[in-house]
Image (cartoon, rainbow, N blue to C red; front, top):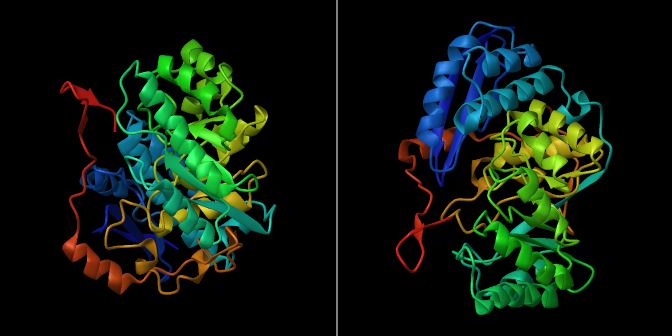
Length: 382
Protein backbone atom coordinates (compact mmCIF):
# COMPACT_ATOMS: atom_id res chain seq x y z
CA UNK A 1 0.00 0.00 0.00
CA UNK A 2 1.27 3.46 -0.94
CA UNK A 3 0.16 7.01 -0.14
CA UNK A 4 -1.11 8.64 -3.32
CA UNK A 5 -2.27 12.06 -2.19
CA UNK A 6 -2.81 14.58 0.60
CA UNK A 7 -5.72 17.04 0.57
CA UNK A 8 -6.72 19.75 3.05
CA UNK A 9 -10.10 21.35 3.69
CA UNK A 10 -10.63 24.64 5.51
CA UNK A 11 -14.09 24.27 7.11
CA UNK A 12 -16.23 26.37 9.46
CA UNK A 13 -16.22 27.36 12.20
CA UNK A 14 -12.39 27.42 12.52
CA UNK A 15 -11.03 24.00 11.58
CA UNK A 16 -8.74 22.37 9.02
CA UNK A 17 -9.20 18.75 7.93
CA UNK A 18 -6.66 16.56 6.14
CA UNK A 19 -7.29 13.48 3.98
CA UNK A 20 -4.59 10.96 3.06
CA UNK A 21 -5.46 8.68 0.14
CA UNK A 22 -3.84 5.37 -0.78
CA UNK A 23 -3.64 3.17 -3.87
CA UNK A 24 -5.74 0.50 -2.12
CA UNK A 25 -8.72 2.80 -1.67
CA UNK A 26 -8.25 3.22 2.08
CA UNK A 27 -8.19 6.83 3.24
CA UNK A 28 -7.45 8.41 6.60
CA UNK A 29 -8.51 11.70 8.13
CA UNK A 30 -6.66 14.10 10.42
CA UNK A 31 -7.25 17.54 11.89
CA UNK A 32 -4.10 19.69 11.76
CA UNK A 33 -4.92 23.22 12.88
CA UNK A 34 -3.85 26.07 15.11
CA UNK A 35 -6.87 28.15 15.97
CA UNK A 36 -6.50 31.45 14.11
CA UNK A 37 -3.58 30.17 12.03
CA UNK A 38 -5.31 27.54 9.90
CA UNK A 39 -3.92 28.76 6.58
CA UNK A 40 -0.37 28.74 7.99
CA UNK A 41 -0.72 25.14 9.16
CA UNK A 42 -2.24 24.25 5.80
CA UNK A 43 0.90 25.48 4.04
CA UNK A 44 3.06 23.41 6.40
CA UNK A 45 0.96 20.30 5.71
CA UNK A 46 1.52 20.58 1.97
CA UNK A 47 5.25 21.16 2.43
CA UNK A 48 5.50 18.06 4.63
CA UNK A 49 3.38 16.00 2.24
CA UNK A 50 6.42 15.72 -0.06
CA UNK A 51 8.02 13.49 2.57
CA UNK A 52 5.28 10.84 2.64
CA UNK A 53 3.57 10.67 -0.76
CA UNK A 54 4.57 7.38 -2.35
CA UNK A 55 5.43 5.82 1.02
CA UNK A 56 3.84 2.96 2.97
CA UNK A 57 1.24 4.53 5.33
CA UNK A 58 1.59 1.74 7.88
CA UNK A 59 5.09 2.86 8.91
CA UNK A 60 3.55 5.33 11.34
CA UNK A 61 6.46 5.77 13.73
CA UNK A 62 8.99 6.15 10.95
CA UNK A 63 6.82 8.82 9.34
CA UNK A 64 6.47 10.58 12.70
CA UNK A 65 10.25 10.73 13.08
CA UNK A 66 10.83 11.95 9.52
CA UNK A 67 8.05 14.55 9.60
CA UNK A 68 9.24 15.94 12.95
CA UNK A 69 13.00 15.75 12.44
CA UNK A 70 13.52 15.68 8.67
CA UNK A 71 13.57 19.44 8.15
CA UNK A 72 16.32 20.19 10.71
CA UNK A 73 14.13 22.90 12.33
CA UNK A 74 11.42 21.25 14.38
CA UNK A 75 8.71 21.76 16.98
CA UNK A 76 6.52 24.74 17.67
CA UNK A 77 2.77 25.05 17.16
CA UNK A 78 2.69 25.11 13.34
CA UNK A 79 4.95 22.17 12.52
CA UNK A 80 3.74 20.11 15.48
CA UNK A 81 0.10 20.65 14.46
CA UNK A 82 0.82 19.71 10.85
CA UNK A 83 2.56 16.57 12.13
CA UNK A 84 -0.44 15.82 14.38
CA UNK A 85 -2.83 15.79 11.43
CA UNK A 86 -0.66 13.36 9.49
CA UNK A 87 -0.29 11.11 12.52
CA UNK A 88 -4.04 10.98 13.15
CA UNK A 89 -4.73 10.13 9.51
CA UNK A 90 -2.07 7.41 9.42
CA UNK A 91 -3.50 5.75 12.53
CA UNK A 92 -6.94 5.98 10.90
CA UNK A 93 -5.61 4.16 7.84
CA UNK A 94 -3.87 1.53 9.98
CA UNK A 95 -7.07 0.80 11.88
CA UNK A 96 -9.14 0.55 8.72
CA UNK A 97 -6.53 -1.69 7.08
CA UNK A 98 -6.60 -4.05 10.07
CA UNK A 99 -10.35 -3.61 10.67
CA UNK A 100 -9.77 -2.52 14.27
CA UNK A 101 -10.24 0.68 16.26
CA UNK A 102 -7.03 2.53 17.02
CA UNK A 103 -7.26 1.86 20.76
CA UNK A 104 -6.93 -1.86 20.04
CA UNK A 105 -3.74 -1.17 18.09
CA UNK A 106 -2.47 0.80 21.10
CA UNK A 107 -2.72 -2.24 23.35
CA UNK A 108 -6.45 -2.54 23.88
CA UNK A 109 -8.93 -0.75 26.11
CA UNK A 110 -8.27 -0.19 29.80
CA UNK A 111 -11.81 1.16 30.43
CA UNK A 112 -15.29 0.71 29.03
CA UNK A 113 -16.35 4.36 28.95
CA UNK A 114 -14.67 7.76 29.01
CA UNK A 115 -15.87 10.71 31.07
CA UNK A 116 -16.30 13.97 29.15
CA UNK A 117 -17.04 17.55 30.13
CA UNK A 118 -18.66 20.57 28.50
CA UNK A 119 -17.88 24.26 28.43
CA UNK A 120 -20.15 26.88 29.98
CA UNK A 121 -20.43 30.66 30.33
CA UNK A 122 -18.26 31.93 27.47
CA UNK A 123 -14.98 33.82 27.22
CA UNK A 124 -16.08 36.51 29.68
CA UNK A 125 -17.99 34.26 32.05
CA UNK A 126 -21.62 35.18 32.71
CA UNK A 127 -24.99 33.48 33.07
CA UNK A 128 -23.23 30.72 34.93
CA UNK A 129 -26.05 29.13 36.92
CA UNK A 130 -28.31 28.79 33.88
CA UNK A 131 -25.49 27.46 31.70
CA UNK A 132 -24.36 24.89 34.25
CA UNK A 133 -27.94 23.77 34.87
CA UNK A 134 -28.36 23.20 31.14
CA UNK A 135 -25.35 20.88 31.01
CA UNK A 136 -26.48 19.02 34.11
CA UNK A 137 -29.86 18.53 32.44
CA UNK A 138 -28.06 17.04 29.43
CA UNK A 139 -26.45 14.49 31.73
CA UNK A 140 -22.93 15.88 32.10
CA UNK A 141 -21.23 15.32 35.44
CA UNK A 142 -18.48 17.89 34.87
CA UNK A 143 -18.23 21.36 33.32
CA UNK A 144 -15.46 23.85 32.67
CA UNK A 145 -15.68 27.62 32.77
CA UNK A 146 -13.31 30.52 32.35
CA UNK A 147 -12.35 31.97 35.71
CA UNK A 148 -12.25 35.58 34.51
CA UNK A 149 -12.00 37.93 31.59
CA UNK A 150 -8.96 40.21 31.26
CA UNK A 151 -7.21 40.59 34.62
CA UNK A 152 -4.59 43.07 35.75
CA UNK A 153 -1.24 41.77 36.97
CA UNK A 154 -2.30 42.73 40.49
CA UNK A 155 -6.09 42.91 40.45
CA UNK A 156 -8.37 44.56 42.97
CA UNK A 157 -9.92 42.64 45.87
CA UNK A 158 -13.27 43.03 44.08
CA UNK A 159 -11.95 41.39 40.91
CA UNK A 160 -10.45 38.54 42.91
CA UNK A 161 -13.66 38.02 44.86
CA UNK A 162 -15.66 38.00 41.61
CA UNK A 163 -13.66 34.97 40.47
CA UNK A 164 -14.58 33.12 43.64
CA UNK A 165 -18.22 34.21 43.44
CA UNK A 166 -18.56 32.84 39.91
CA UNK A 167 -17.01 29.55 40.97
CA UNK A 168 -19.37 29.38 43.95
CA UNK A 169 -22.32 29.96 41.63
CA UNK A 170 -21.28 27.03 39.46
CA UNK A 171 -20.64 24.82 42.48
CA UNK A 172 -24.06 25.61 43.94
CA UNK A 173 -25.69 24.15 40.81
CA UNK A 174 -23.32 21.21 40.46
CA UNK A 175 -23.53 20.14 44.08
CA UNK A 176 -20.89 17.93 45.68
CA UNK A 177 -21.22 14.95 43.30
CA UNK A 178 -20.24 16.72 40.06
CA UNK A 179 -17.00 18.39 39.04
CA UNK A 180 -15.99 21.93 38.15
CA UNK A 181 -12.88 22.84 36.16
CA UNK A 182 -11.75 26.46 36.03
CA UNK A 183 -9.64 27.78 33.14
CA UNK A 184 -7.63 30.99 33.52
CA UNK A 185 -6.30 30.79 29.94
CA UNK A 186 -2.98 32.29 31.06
CA UNK A 187 -4.74 35.57 31.88
CA UNK A 188 -3.50 35.71 35.47
CA UNK A 189 -0.04 36.71 36.67
CA UNK A 190 1.91 34.45 39.04
CA UNK A 191 1.23 36.89 41.90
CA UNK A 192 -2.53 36.79 41.29
CA UNK A 193 -2.49 33.03 40.81
CA UNK A 194 -0.89 32.61 44.23
CA UNK A 195 -3.64 34.83 45.66
CA UNK A 196 -6.57 33.21 43.83
CA UNK A 197 -5.80 29.52 44.13
CA UNK A 198 -6.11 29.36 47.94
CA UNK A 199 -9.35 31.34 47.65
CA UNK A 200 -10.73 28.72 45.23
CA UNK A 201 -10.00 25.76 47.48
CA UNK A 202 -13.50 25.93 48.97
CA UNK A 203 -15.15 25.00 45.64
CA UNK A 204 -12.77 22.03 45.21
CA UNK A 205 -12.14 22.23 41.45
CA UNK A 206 -11.17 19.03 39.69
CA UNK A 207 -8.39 21.26 38.35
CA UNK A 208 -7.47 24.86 37.58
CA UNK A 209 -6.15 25.18 34.04
CA UNK A 210 -3.39 27.51 32.84
CA UNK A 211 -3.34 29.69 35.96
CA UNK A 212 -0.26 31.33 34.41
CA UNK A 213 1.20 31.44 30.92
CA UNK A 214 2.78 28.13 29.85
CA UNK A 215 6.15 29.74 29.11
CA UNK A 216 6.49 30.72 32.78
CA UNK A 217 7.96 27.55 34.24
CA UNK A 218 10.65 26.46 36.69
CA UNK A 219 10.58 27.84 40.23
CA UNK A 220 7.76 30.28 39.44
CA UNK A 221 5.41 27.53 38.24
CA UNK A 222 6.45 25.36 41.17
CA UNK A 223 5.53 28.20 43.56
CA UNK A 224 2.07 28.45 41.98
CA UNK A 225 1.56 24.70 42.27
CA UNK A 226 2.69 24.74 45.92
CA UNK A 227 0.54 27.68 47.04
CA UNK A 228 -2.63 25.59 47.44
CA UNK A 229 -4.08 22.10 47.31
CA UNK A 230 -5.90 22.78 44.02
CA UNK A 231 -4.70 20.47 41.21
CA UNK A 232 -3.01 22.45 38.43
CA UNK A 233 -3.50 21.52 34.76
CA UNK A 234 -1.80 22.85 31.64
CA UNK A 235 -0.41 21.82 28.30
CA UNK A 236 -2.60 22.98 25.42
CA UNK A 237 0.27 25.25 24.34
CA UNK A 238 3.02 22.66 24.80
CA UNK A 239 3.86 20.48 21.83
CA UNK A 240 6.11 17.58 22.82
CA UNK A 241 7.17 15.34 25.68
CA UNK A 242 10.32 17.45 26.03
CA UNK A 243 8.22 20.52 26.79
CA UNK A 244 6.07 18.64 29.31
CA UNK A 245 8.95 17.38 31.45
CA UNK A 246 9.74 20.76 33.09
CA UNK A 247 6.10 21.35 34.05
CA UNK A 248 5.87 17.86 35.50
CA UNK A 249 9.08 18.56 37.42
CA UNK A 250 7.29 21.64 38.81
CA UNK A 251 4.48 19.46 40.19
CA UNK A 252 1.62 19.91 37.73
CA UNK A 253 -1.10 17.32 38.40
CA UNK A 254 -2.86 17.14 35.01
CA UNK A 255 -1.28 17.35 31.54
CA UNK A 256 -3.40 18.58 28.63
CA UNK A 257 -1.69 17.94 25.30
CA UNK A 258 -3.92 18.59 22.31
CA UNK A 259 -4.17 15.74 19.76
CA UNK A 260 -4.19 18.33 16.96
CA UNK A 261 -1.23 20.33 18.28
CA UNK A 262 1.12 18.00 20.16
CA UNK A 263 2.21 15.59 17.44
CA UNK A 264 -0.97 13.51 17.27
CA UNK A 265 -1.88 10.17 18.76
CA UNK A 266 1.72 8.91 18.86
CA UNK A 267 3.00 11.80 20.96
CA UNK A 268 -0.06 11.95 23.23
CA UNK A 269 0.66 8.38 24.24
CA UNK A 270 4.27 9.22 25.08
CA UNK A 271 3.29 12.35 27.03
CA UNK A 272 0.77 10.29 29.00
CA UNK A 273 3.42 7.68 29.82
CA UNK A 274 5.80 10.42 30.99
CA UNK A 275 3.06 11.90 33.18
CA UNK A 276 2.41 8.49 34.69
CA UNK A 277 5.97 8.45 36.01
CA UNK A 278 5.10 11.58 38.02
CA UNK A 279 1.70 10.32 39.20
CA UNK A 280 0.01 12.90 36.95
CA UNK A 281 -3.14 12.42 34.89
CA UNK A 282 -3.97 12.97 31.22
CA UNK A 283 -6.88 15.22 30.20
CA UNK A 284 -6.43 15.99 26.49
CA UNK A 285 -7.27 19.51 25.33
CA UNK A 286 -9.89 19.40 22.56
CA UNK A 287 -12.01 22.47 21.72
CA UNK A 288 -11.87 21.50 18.04
CA UNK A 289 -13.66 19.26 15.54
CA UNK A 290 -14.71 15.63 15.21
CA UNK A 291 -11.41 14.17 14.02
CA UNK A 292 -9.45 15.70 16.88
CA UNK A 293 -12.03 14.44 19.39
CA UNK A 294 -12.07 10.96 17.86
CA UNK A 295 -8.27 10.80 18.14
CA UNK A 296 -8.38 11.96 21.76
CA UNK A 297 -10.96 9.33 22.68
CA UNK A 298 -8.93 6.53 21.10
CA UNK A 299 -6.00 7.53 23.33
CA UNK A 300 -8.26 7.87 26.37
CA UNK A 301 -9.56 4.32 26.07
CA UNK A 302 -6.02 2.92 25.96
CA UNK A 303 -4.36 5.12 28.61
CA UNK A 304 -4.31 4.04 32.28
CA UNK A 305 -3.76 7.53 33.76
CA UNK A 306 -6.49 9.25 31.74
CA UNK A 307 -8.73 11.59 33.78
CA UNK A 308 -11.40 13.34 31.68
CA UNK A 309 -11.96 14.52 28.09
CA UNK A 310 -12.80 18.00 26.81
CA UNK A 311 -15.19 18.34 23.85
CA UNK A 312 -16.69 21.32 22.02
CA UNK A 313 -20.37 20.53 21.47
CA UNK A 314 -22.32 23.81 21.92
CA UNK A 315 -19.08 25.64 22.69
CA UNK A 316 -19.20 29.41 22.33
CA UNK A 317 -16.81 29.44 19.35
CA UNK A 318 -18.89 27.07 17.20
CA UNK A 319 -21.42 29.59 15.88
CA UNK A 320 -23.61 27.96 13.24
CA UNK A 321 -21.60 24.73 13.03
CA UNK A 322 -21.13 21.72 15.32
CA UNK A 323 -18.58 18.93 14.93
CA UNK A 324 -21.40 16.44 14.35
CA UNK A 325 -22.26 18.27 11.10
CA UNK A 326 -19.28 16.64 9.39
CA UNK A 327 -20.15 13.04 10.29
CA UNK A 328 -22.21 10.49 8.36
CA UNK A 329 -23.29 9.07 11.71
CA UNK A 330 -22.92 11.21 14.86
CA UNK A 331 -23.69 8.32 17.24
CA UNK A 332 -20.01 7.77 18.26
CA UNK A 333 -20.34 11.13 20.02
CA UNK A 334 -23.57 10.34 21.85
CA UNK A 335 -22.73 10.92 25.51
CA UNK A 336 -24.73 9.04 28.12
CA UNK A 337 -24.69 10.32 31.71
CA UNK A 338 -21.58 12.34 30.85
CA UNK A 339 -19.64 9.45 29.32
CA UNK A 340 -18.58 8.40 25.81
CA UNK A 341 -19.03 4.76 24.88
CA UNK A 342 -16.03 2.86 23.56
CA UNK A 343 -15.98 3.18 19.73
CA UNK A 344 -16.20 -0.10 17.83
CA UNK A 345 -15.60 1.15 14.29
CA UNK A 346 -12.25 0.75 12.57
CA UNK A 347 -9.59 3.44 12.65
CA UNK A 348 -10.66 6.57 14.51
CA UNK A 349 -14.17 5.13 14.80
CA UNK A 350 -15.95 7.85 12.81
CA UNK A 351 -17.03 8.23 9.19
CA UNK A 352 -16.44 11.69 7.76
CA UNK A 353 -19.14 13.04 5.44
CA UNK A 354 -16.76 13.92 2.64
CA UNK A 355 -19.41 15.58 0.50
CA UNK A 356 -20.31 17.91 3.35
CA UNK A 357 -16.63 18.63 4.03
CA UNK A 358 -16.05 19.56 0.39
CA UNK A 359 -19.12 21.81 0.34
CA UNK A 360 -18.07 23.51 3.58
CA UNK A 361 -14.52 24.02 2.30
CA UNK A 362 -15.91 26.12 -0.56
CA UNK A 363 -17.09 28.54 2.14
CA UNK A 364 -14.01 28.14 4.34
CA UNK A 365 -13.37 30.55 7.22
CA UNK A 366 -11.05 33.29 8.35
CA UNK A 367 -11.34 32.85 12.11
CA UNK A 368 -8.91 34.83 14.24
CA UNK A 369 -8.27 34.87 17.97
CA UNK A 370 -9.73 37.95 19.68
CA UNK A 371 -7.37 40.76 20.66
CA UNK A 372 -8.15 42.01 24.17
CA UNK A 373 -6.99 45.15 25.92
CA UNK A 374 -6.93 46.32 29.51
CA UNK A 375 -8.77 49.47 30.57
CA UNK A 376 -5.59 51.49 30.05
CA UNK A 377 -5.30 50.34 26.43
CA UNK A 378 -2.45 47.86 26.89
CA UNK A 379 -2.57 44.33 25.48
CA UNK A 380 -4.41 41.73 27.60
CA UNK A 381 -4.11 37.97 27.40
CA UNK A 382 -7.07 36.31 25.72
